[in-house]
Structures are given as structure tokens and as C-alpha cells.
View (cartoon, helix red, strand yellow):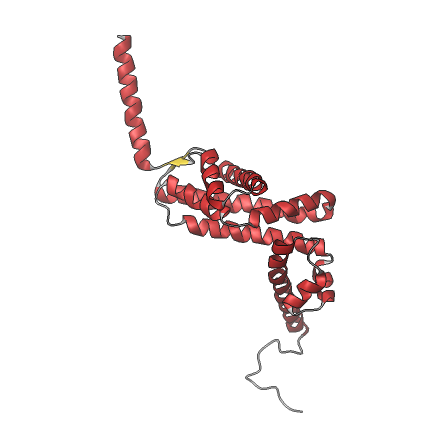
Length: 234
């Protein structure tokens, strides 16, 4: 009987555990390829204008693989929209890392969000889940993750720069995304440019925090006001 080579790795191809891991890895790769192929088609053509065969051709896959991994075209649409929104959130955080003041931070967030159509895409998924409640859990998990990661990123920036936040991090994150969704959907309906959307977002959001210097100046103003009022009362 031939002996196994000492160089053969543990868990070789004949190992059921290895085979299961390989299958899961291949499955994740195929799902990712299908999502990558479907997302630009859905953005360009919409749900009704995109056929499963079109997605399969773009991914160099079989239509049966789409139904195997996602069951329906609607489920694939919602997952694409959710994934793209989280990608946008990550890009937004990265764009704001260089900000040195609260004003720069808010502007970087608003500018990045309004330059993308990911929120409009996600809004279509929200509308779809009104009729397909079986798809709602994915949307709910996406929104929860969006707020949690947004709050974490904002709290990190506040602590890093010593800013004084005007609201709790979770409240700030939820407010930011609520404003973004509302402003962008309204703007898309009216044909507004990304620049106009950004301006409107900044107007509605207002100040999110005060820098250390701003806080110090505010204290000085308050002290002078109190002193002035005391003299007037005397």
C-alpha cells in the first residue's frame, strides 16, 4: 500500500470537512459574482427590465444558479440594494476620515452620499418589501447594521478630535440617514443635481457637533453675557 506523502496537507480533497469548506467557499464566490453582475443591471434597467438570463450571461453563470442561491429575482434585487447601501456607508466613513472639524466631517458625509445612486436603489427595495414581507428581514438587518456602524464611526471621530457632539452617536447616525433618504428621494423626483442634493442635506442637518475651539469660544460668550446681564440687573 502506498504511503501518504508527508507533504500532503491535512484535510486533503478526500476529507469530507475539506470538501464541505470548498463547497461553501465556491458558493460564497458564486453569490458574490451574481451580485456583482446583477447590481449594475438593476440600477440601469430596474427590476422589471432585467431578466434572469441577462444576469446569468453577465456573470458567466447559468440561470438555475440564480434561483439556487437567491430563489427569486426579487430576492436578488433586494440583496443587491442592501449590499450596495452598506458599501456606500463604508465609502462615506472613509471619505470623512480626513475631516478636521465637525463642518468638514458633515460635508464629506453629505457629498459622498449624494454622489451615489445607492440610496435611490435601496428605496426601490424598500418599496418592494411592502408587497414581499418575506424579504423584509434582510432590509431590517441592513438598516440595523447601517445605524450601528454609523454610530460607531461618528463616536470614534468625536472622541478622536475631542468634539462636543450635540446629539448621542446613535441619534446622529439615524438622523443623518433619515435626512439622506428623504432629501435624495425628493431630489431624484425633481431632477436635482448631486450638488443641489448635498446643499440641501447640509441645510437640513445643520451642525452635528462643536470643535474644542468652538466650545471654548461659546463658553467665553456665555460668560460675557452672564456678566453683562448681571451689570444690567445691578
